[in-house]
Length: 280
Image (tube, rainbow, N blue to C red; front, side, top):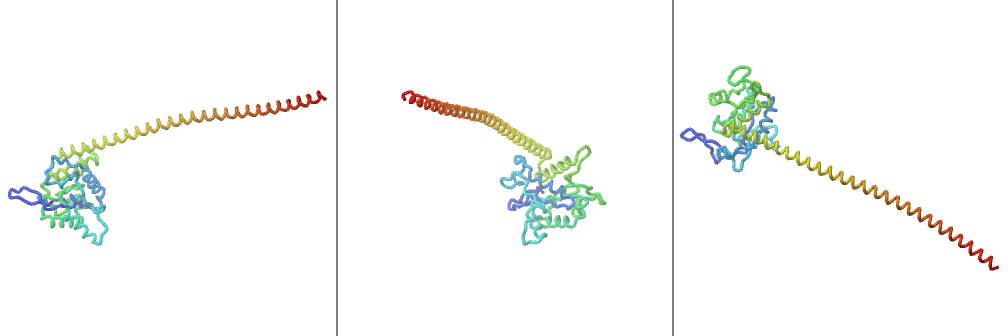
């Protein structure tokens, strides 16, 4: 979906345009880890659809995805690298620029921004600079905004910052930048975005707890079954030994009875012989 301007100056969606990507991340290779984090977290964010203008969503859309990052999403094709990038840029709704002194001096980042603006009616409101390091507007070696973005439409904004404030760790700084980025794209207050992220984290923990308890119950059931089987096997072994001992005893008795029978037979023969001698 694209944007158009009403007479009142209000930005609205052009519902005739359907984009393949929700956002395209433009970044310096030196900031690849942060770009991967941003892509992963954006695509996993569950949109609070009841708080978002329907014009900002695709039908049945529950997540901010797909988000294009060239290292992961470029497909093997006959097109050149540049043509593939241009195609992806044309088919994306927002351009996220991961801003750092490295990206500020990157030729490719500047080219991606220029091409995005060319294909999106030169609408800077669709460009989302995300400060990763450096100082926007400093115009020195710490400058993080590419030159094309050093203009009032950008610098007058409260830009998302993936930078830890005093007392925060790096993870917290990155998450704050993520929240600010989502807030800008969905036009929803940061508190609502943070609440959604916290709620998703709670749901994730509940799923983990449920899976852990379920796995524990299965383990307990298998342990009880194994103990029962072991106990039964022990009883069967004892019974088998008793039966073996009884069989050996019966065999011994049978041998004794056989020997006794032979002895009786021998005695009977002797008595018969003596009887014959008496008649003579």
